[in-house]
Image (tube, helix red, strand yellow):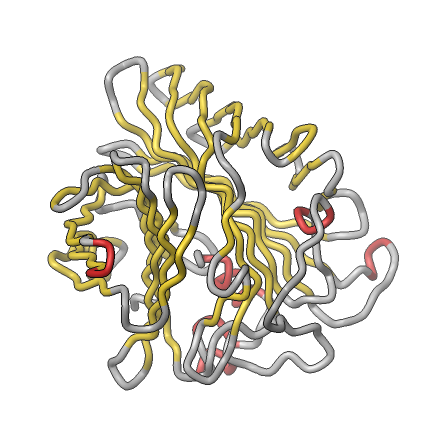
Amino acid sequence: MNAKYAALLVIWPLPALAQGFAGMGTGAEGFAMPAPDPVFDFPADHGAHPDYRIEWWYLTANLDGADGQEYGLQWTLFRFALAPETGEGWSVPQVWMGHAAVTTPTDHYVAERFGRGGIGQAGVAADPFEAWIDDWRLWGPDFGDLQMRATGAEFAYEMQLDAQGPLVFHGADGFSVKSASGQASYYYSQPFYAVEGVLTLPEGEVAVTGSAWLDREWSSQPLSEDQTGWDWFSLSFDSGDKLMGFQLRQTDGTEFTAATWIGPDGTTEAYPDGAFDAEPLGLTEVAGREVPTRWQVTLPDRGVDVTVEAMNGAAWMGVSVPYWEGPVRISGSHGGRGYLEMTGYE
């Protein structure tokens, strides 16, 4: 799910905020719209879909350092279209935004970049795969064997990613419904990456290993006008099972939810609205607001009743459209680690 939608505030007029978070409840006349029963075409669908209004390549990682410390890592590239037309050079109506972050138990380092399509500054190629904005890159011979790098004022990282399992598809074979009125996206993930590399922090370099989860999603109007933000969980359990779950908060105080259970072999089961539940247990004051950073997450059909707690409650993304994103630890019926993203907290 992720803060990808937040990117649109950069280009959408401020009055649009009244219609869904960052204007994503507004109409999308002229753009393509997701439809049920999608037929994906790989490797082409790893690349960009400029007929749709917004898209992202969104990677998070839970890492263990050679120094005995845990780390979290984020690398994200967003594409959003200013208009449903084509062009050349500077007239190409595609804007790109990158977010990179490193989280430690005590610090959270963030960087943001913007680029234009059509001039080579940013983009995505499908075969061989390459996603880039300036010198930030995610690339490799295919989607299963990737390298990744990014730099910020206080950090840098170079990582190697090796997929240990298949792609997984959310919702109905990749058609992910986001509201009772039918807004939707195309949504698949590669949640099985093994990662190794080097983080560079103010204290110096540290070798790291761990696991990563990459989300791919595109749409043109994925939210309804009464949805104000979301809480998104990607949880990797010690058993080898995984759970993606999200709730979209609505103006009447209710939530629309969806979830995907992922077995160690990549088999999936999708869960509709109401099956997954996330209830805040504790708040952290960060960036002048209170954000829930400790949750009770349940999926009764799978016997999941866990506490999900931020490794660092201050993992605030102070970017153009701010949000919270950071690594979490899992305890209760299942143990493990994962990532949490939260938007729309004022």
